[in-house]
Amino acid sequence: MPRTTPPRPLDVEALFPELAAHRGTTTRLHPRPGRPEATESSVGGPLLWPADEPWPVCTEAHAHARGRRPADIHRSREVLAAAWRRVPQGGPTDEDRRLLGELEETHRVEGDAATAPLPLTALAQLYRRDLPDLPAGPDGCDLLQVFWCPFDAHGPTGHGMLLDLRWRRSWEVTEVLSAPPEPAVVGFDGYVPEPCVLHPEQVTTYPFAGLLPEELCARIDAWDEEQEERAEEREDEDGEGDAPVLGYQYDLSIPPGWRVGGYASWHLTDPSPMDCRSCSAPMELLLTVDSSEWDGGSGSWRPLEDRGLRARRAAAPTAVVVGRWGELNVFACPRDPGHPHRWSIQ
Image (cartoon, rainbow, N blue to C red; front, top):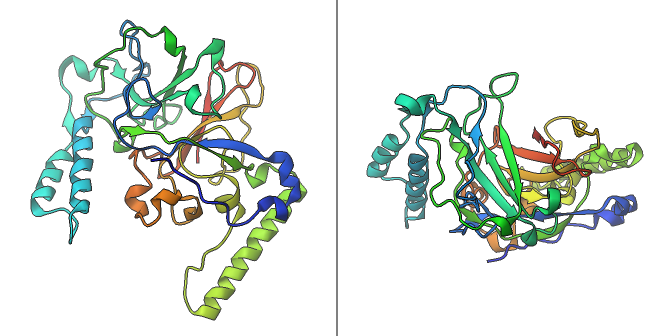
């Protein structure tokens, strides 16, 4: 089933005509549980990976011998999903809780597997033919494949994320790897995606307010404050709390959820320059990996087909969690897509 973003609550260009010069597009991926094939764009699905090419592994030395088994994580999610589908009273039974307790146990890997190179987890693969805002890869590559390490054990702090992005020409793959390796255990459940098919939808987007011209940003901020004041007045008049607040950031500019292209959000930190470390060119947003497709503050972006569904389950079909329920923005060099990528967690 396709997914359709509702019209924006108001015409933001009518409020701020200067935004027309900054209008862009982004493609929302709308991942939903399914059984994708290797020839399809997907999250957590099988990759079009050549049988004669080594599978990516984590190249940094860190402990990876203790954690949860990926199969147990998937099974736990199945048990919980089935429990909450029960009617009339949904929820885990005593037997479910017993099984979940077993599945949530951590395990220690013994022998060579404890020190052998760690296979990376396949996060997503994206075909350009499916996604109008996915930029071209280097040398005519049409397929982007995304991996990450399932342990937070990287970078200067020793608690950071490791990404590995690979571009390839899909038509050159003749024999597909049928049984890719996977880590015996993972350090964090949120690194294990559920298989999802995609329902791409291109929508209009505008930059993060802090990156707009100073005068325009100031006017948008003043308008946002006015909306908050009006919401407070409605609460006082109606005697009810949580009056909806319309805002540029959460309703009119950058959609939440998985998407390619468009503009990055900097709602957690101040905007940070993302310049290519190879050529110093300002980088552009390639991919956003989000922990949820909408939440209480961004509910206006919930697809029409998902109206009435509970956000806690319906808005997080991939089961991927970035940081503390945030989003990962991956940037690419527009001069040479073969240059190393950069990323930011918001």
